[in-house]
Length: 274
Length: 274
Image 1 (cartoon, each protein chain N blue to C red):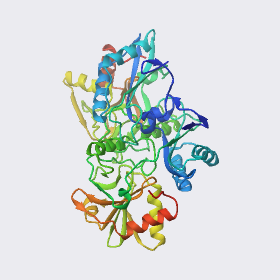
Image 2 (image 1 turned 60 degrees about the horizontal axis):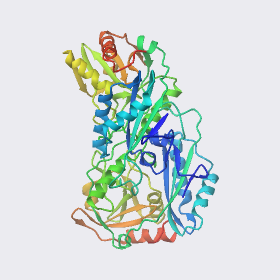
Image 3 (image 1 turned 60 degrees about the vertical axis):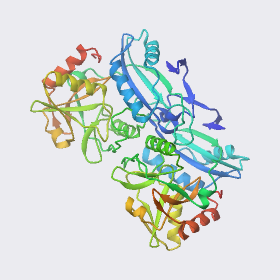
Image 4 (image 1 turned 180 degrees about the vertical axis):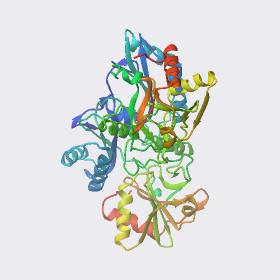
């Protein structure tokens, strides 16, 4: 089921700038019992992205109505909201006034094994490197070719996820999730000023840890540090938190930070318990 | 007029990966008397892009037939060919087998003043910076948000073009064209290993200069060097060569390299004389 600008349609003009230049943003919501979870958090990031790209954000109440319309009677699912700058403009230059296109689509809940949440996953460091683009980093824009190449690499390795480094060999994120590590009771996650997406769940995890007076560091992270961590986990809106139990040949145990944060996110009902 | 996979249509599935992730490539041809110019050169770059992104390139003879079909009886125009990886796949991961989408559209010839070609243009250095992405540099892919932001900046300045630097302040290109400078009889153009598009006309200019035994350097270029050059010009498939007569407050005269190369490209009939 797809709603384009409020109409049930499945096709869009080829002049739409999302198709021509990846000129837009998106959000992916977990849907539980008819409601998109972490609505406020996603919308905050969407508004930030609109500001950064100078895209006119539609009325939030309109987006909310349309998203709820698609989610009615959905017990468990995934909702994707795409905002494109709209049609037209000459070449790269955005048109002076454009009507932002709203594309909202409903998808099946992915059938990840529940062991991923309980026992964790074994992953590796990807060869594909993330570039640096300060103009675009942090937001969830539609220029996702690097993630496509990462996704391809993971698919060839038959791996559910993988650690993505940037061109300076810093740890940035995983292909479709953010990465955290714990070392000596400090929760650490990479700084995303040059690459990466600031995940909604990532930001909530940071808040939860800070509220609990845990020490949190957001900074550049090297591979050696990741490999020497006490705990490692991944987060996004659909998976919640997956413990990492192995990177390359290094093993980890899902520890108390990972377990507490998993529990807390479920308690807050911003992720779904698998 | 638009041909999608050989059919006259103007709409496309929202599941197409060009829209979802900018997962594709494009080429922009000048069309003269029913023919797309520099066909071989564009197709070479397209094939290189397909290889780099692991996109299945359609039969070239099919692309040629469809492009000619749209260009019939077009005296002067612009043809845009988009290849998208196609529909589907779960998330970022490309589907195992996918049918590449072909989108071919015809556009009006842009009405640039002929003085741009004759007397040159005055431009400035843009504030928007190009990121570094070695995995994507050189090819003409659909992840063009940085160019959209550059285009917006130029539109606010009411400037036809502008010099784009990368995040290390190297000169890379202009918003929609490549940049060359001449200093002490050496033709210099930026290396595009971390950012930028290898223009079809750029590559032909390099070949022409090398064949004429001119000294050519492809390397990193700093702003000071650009500002201290004897000649500066921009190139792409639609404009051919535009001399630059001013950058910020520095003036240039269109010199003999610029004029010779302009003439040569017109003689070879790979650009259109305005």
